[in-house]
Image (tube, rainbow, N blue to C red; front, side, top):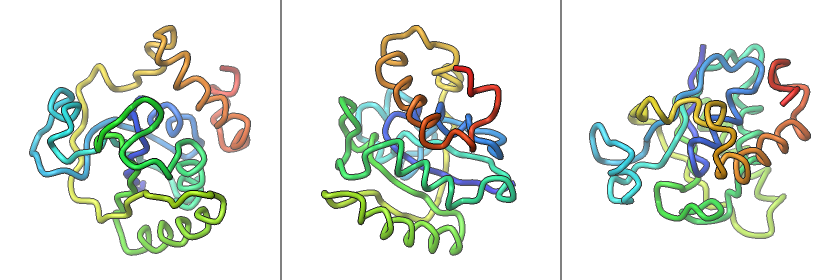
Length: 179
C-alpha cells in the first residue's frame, strides 16, 4: 500500500470521492499542513492552526496509480480558488498536495503543469512535503455515507460524487456505481 495526502476543501467531500475508487483501501479525514499538534475540528475551523482539512488515502498503485488519483483530485474541486471551495472559506479549505516521496512530488508537479492548461485562472494548489496527518474525530469519518440526507451532503457532496461517476466511472468500485 502507498499513501497519498490531499486537501481539496471540505474533507467530507474529498473522502466521499476517493473512497469510491478501485484500488483505494482506506480514506481517513483529518488535518494536515499546519503547526498545531493534535488539532481538533473546532480549532481547525477557526482557521488559526495552519492545518487544512485533508484526507489520507491508502491505495494499491498497481490498481490505481498516484497519477490517476491526481486526475480525480483536479477534476473534483476548484484548484484556482485561494483558501476556499464554494461557500467554505478559510485556509483550512485550501487546495494542497502533501507528497510522501520525491516520486510523488515529481508526478504532482508534472500533473500541476498539465492541468494548468485546462484552467483560465492560475492554479493555487500548494505542493508541499508531507509532515504529519492528524485523524479527525470519528463522526467525520464516512460522513457522506452516514448522512446522505443532510442538506450539505445532498447539495454539495452528491453532485461531486455524480461528477466522479460520470467522468471516472470505470475507476469506481462496483458497489458505488448504483448510488
